[in-house]
Image (cartoon, rainbow, N blue to C red):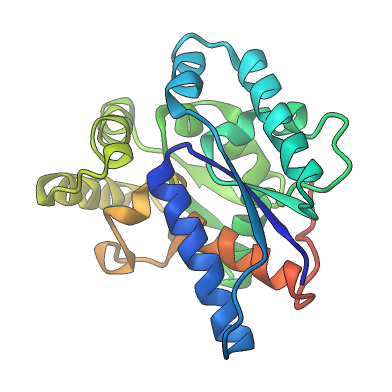
Length: 237
């Protein structure tokens, strides 16, 4: 079994989900007393959030590169970056790194294409929805990507940062997300990407009239499948 390097803390709420999901997947595939071989580097999200807010993405990239090198030094065979938004600095993170990054957008695209879906709605942080780094990565796999309008993007982002990263889950926010999802479906989305690792704490497949793609679960399962030799790394673009 390869050693999974989890680069988390953004937020720790979702990183805890990653740890649970990778171990459940190993138990499902191996049974018995088996659990995942992992090392975890958890950053202080307050530092990263400040860099995001101030647009200091190069600083954030250097911070995560240092963390990724720490995972490599600790024996990780590959890196799983436990956040969608910070894949914006994936190239900086992997600079000089001797082990691969399992890119979350590539695992998500593979799942979408396996479902024979061409057009997806994307929910995530304001950075993920509005900036091109994530949408273009999905589009490079041949997918059409729709995002909510500005007002809905603000709502989705606010709920993530003001509530979900702090472990706060409310029925009012769940209903608001359902409305945003319905708008994306009305605009032509055949599926919806839960493109923030905290979103799965709030909504699930039952909250959407079309198939959903929970990136945290998909990423964690792909990491285990690769670690156990059940699958190769998904094709990059």
